[in-house]
Image 1 (cartoon, rainbow, N blue to C red):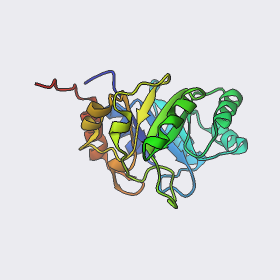
Image 2 (cartoon, helix red, strand yellow; image 1 turned 180 degrees about the horizontal axis):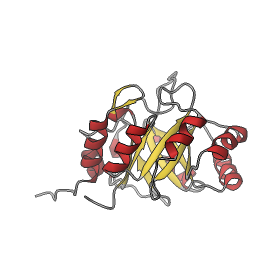
Image 3 (cartoon, helix red, strand yellow; image 1 turned 90 degrees about the vertical axis):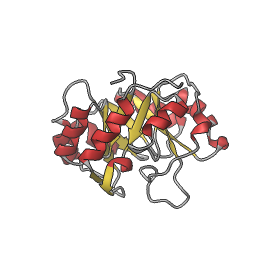
Image 4 (spheres, helix red, strand yellow; image 1 turned 180 degrees about the vertical axis):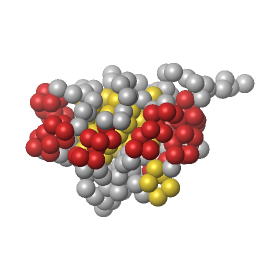
Length: 220
């Protein structure tokens, strides 16, 4: 396995999927706190799942425009290692969350076309990490997890001042190509390893991690 690729399995809702992701080599596990998502978990459910995660695997709370009270409820009960802000949070809000809660913050930036790329540089000034995702269509119920990809050429071999993670439409079948095309060292998947919305498929989790972590084959 290639040790320099890190994989996040997001939207976990049951202990078996957590165990599969850990066993297969995931570096991050994501828990979604967003009521409209089919991957939503309660604080109590997340606390039980987090208790099964071994040291060295980062537990990430995905929230969407959450206020301080909501973040307090999560962090008072769940041993979270990183906050993922996946809404329309401003750079000022990112800084405020970092300062108040003292945890690393990953900010999701949605990309649909070249006009969206400058936002990556903006948030790189305030976030600890960046999640570069496909921009949700107008009127979509979810800001992410829609199974959509964006044109990877927009971030091809781009380098920012913060670590970044590629997301959006990744699957076991295309993740190796996505890594090769973009130079991403971190990748995130949610719907791409599911058999139905919110239902993780253990075989697809294993296949995704195998494909992402496999050593790159040199081009002839």
